[in-house]
Length: 294
Image (tube, rainbow, N blue to C red; front, top):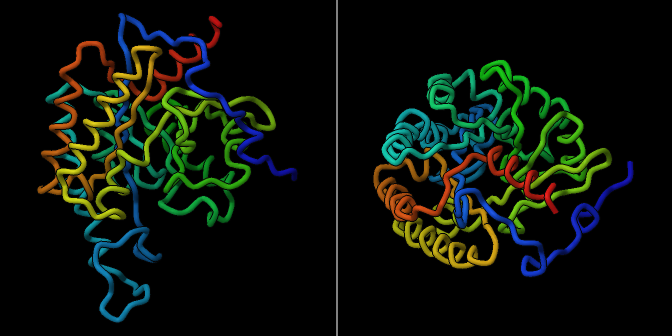
């Protein structure tokens, strides 16, 4: 099958040369907050680690690192719920298909609050290592549809991983947007072998994995970086509407010593009356309507 390179899916477009985008109600920008809900199999190497095994290698079972992640789903996630309820912010659950059954109370909390569910792989595994990508995507879609009553419209690859065919398969399997292509502050459209699929701005910089686990910053870095990024995008949005993503994982920002910095970043953003807090599908519907007016 012919391989489509990234530059063939999306042409270069400087943001300063596009038609102005306008949000409703004189809003300047929209923020969406993505919570990643994952299931880590004890039968496989842990996707990430907090402790290196004393003798090296990848021992199984890896109880310390499995338990480190499990704490997030047992405790950390519920701290997020309190923050979202307090600030009246809708979250987006990027959820493994298998996690819906394993962590059903988490999925139920999202459903009860009418949060959006987007696909995040059936299990937490690099999409390039999945045996059958189409089957994995379909199983994830079906698990979400069975639980929520509607198919997910959005997709976020585990670790933002894709194969050469991922956008094509997503479009063919009924998805309307993806968030893996972190290259813009406005939605864009990707070509596939059938129909276009949108990409909603996500973030690698305001992502707790990058800050806490890879760059090893102190917990307060999350607040300062999120606020700095927000303030600059808000300034940019005077010319045309912008989108900002904020990304958290229960086992990282849900830890007791980090949670306050997530809350304080959102409190800062909540103080701007011309900033919307939307889900991915809300952003998508607005963007497609705006694009249709051009």
